[in-house]
Image 1 (cartoon, rainbow, N blue to C red):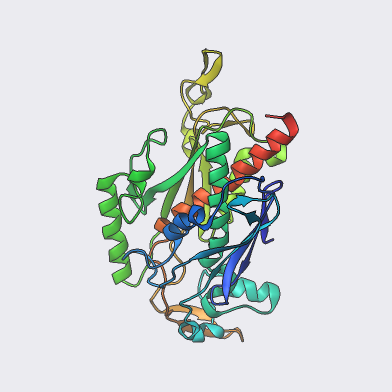
Image 2: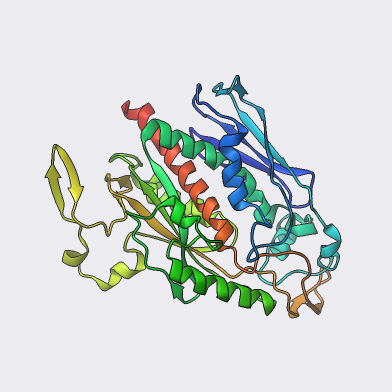
Length: 359
């Protein structure tokens, strides 16, 4: 499916080397002040060519709002936005017309549809995420201005380099203080060095992005199938190159006993809080008022500049050495993608909670 969400619903469209990519946002509340200036900063954080450790493809990724606003405000009608592709080079993918890149979606798309847009991977390219990030910028603005919720993410780990970061205290300016988007300066320098080493070797590396939402009130989410953490997991695992999701204590929680793992409740000033947050801000699929934090694992980028075994479209064994412009590590550009998907989930549940319970 190319659509996501219930009350706040987005549909993305476009291919990596087509005319452009974009999104239609349906369900945005009316009278929200909105212009391209609200959306462009997040697209600038996502775009290629922004530093020496990402894809050198040079795209301005300039967004244009085509519908859904009037005199600087949303109308409550569908908002359509698009970004023109400016630096497509399909000739770099000629060999991939007949050969499948290992661990990429080339073969699976061919198996499913019997046809694929082989230049740049078409719809499987991370360029598809432009629509998500543009829509996510609107969602973040709604959450911030109408609900007092802050959403941010950062690089937590690159391969074996792990940064110590407090999700309750991390600041956006610290995330943006370096090109790898890790708010721990010492760890960031090690990460940058490793990514540069991988690029020189024609290889790639993966890691973990941590997502944080602060100020989410108790009560957002749904029981059973639309649990808040379940929707977050689906959102994150829909991102290109994502391979894992855990929240709060995550897989590490299995090392604790129930007594050690529980988050004790206390009351103060007529409000309930917990003295620890191993639940990651969600219990029973519903937010409990504490900081929501989770981690998303991203694999090493599949396209590497080394010769590898593969097959061609006639199912004959062959080899392929990829060409073109690719990220040696997806993590720095994945940060705004994780923020966008977090915001899309939260704003949808915020609107659902308001519709159902009036608050």
